[in-house]
Length: 346
Image (cartoon, rainbow, N blue to C red; front, side, top):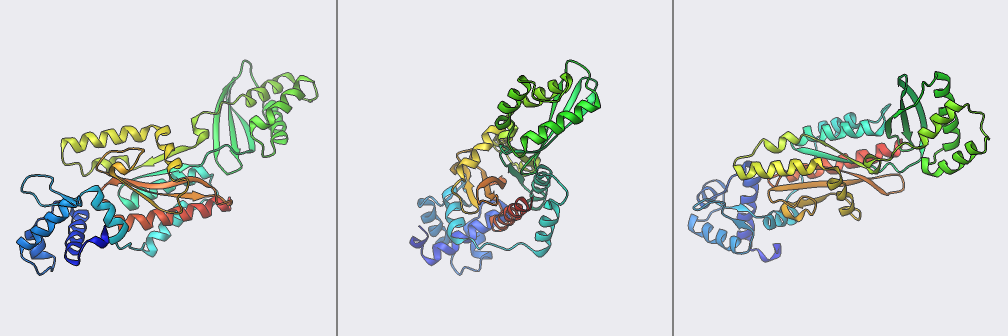
């Protein structure tokens, strides 16, 4: 459709979209004639705006108001007219330093990533943490109370999962150490499911040197539930920013509906399926997004990969359709590449 616009239409359309993204207000013909540097009368500009409206690229939010871009218009702008900016060296350094995984587990690094992205973008941010169907690197047992034990699972990809287990009798410190040593020797990078059959059979055949209490702790460890978080989870920061520029009751209701949707982890995990074939940054404007298909919101998201170039998670920014796309897009792209590199180093 871009090629179908003449120079006048393209110039006026671009000015309207740029003004809308900068100030979020409708743009009128008189404003364009006075401030844009376009040497046309308001009447000529109005005629061009009417043509753009007929083409579905602009609309008037109120009677006698100026024009703002439609979702189709924003898509046209993003795909063909927008000039992508560049992150400053300071922003790049801030992202790299904040996301640094040195001495931290992956989940903490991703928490920090989400926070810095929200801060720099002034929007809500999301990070889809990788699925944790990987082998266990190490397991430890810590006594919280006489019959309450914390199982700490360190996975091969660096993620850490904690589970609290209730025991039917007191567990001495020697049993905590013995059970952990035994499981660590048997797991060796396997998942619990992969190692469980052999371990259970060994205990059943009395082939271990473990005492009864330690055996019971091992059995409890094998029964650690795999809840939804092990299938990946969503880290969202800056939700309150979605309410900062609400100007009408209907906008408030849409914002509340979106906030409720973001709280449902399984809803957002569906995003990974929508970007599985994506080579880089993906932009969903308004109802284009099948995950939360509400008008008024946009999502800029990019996957990150492991050493095998497999997509294991994603990083994104959520905000109103008047996002500062030319700044947000390179920010999301750079952050996803930083995270991919950090994941490789673990």
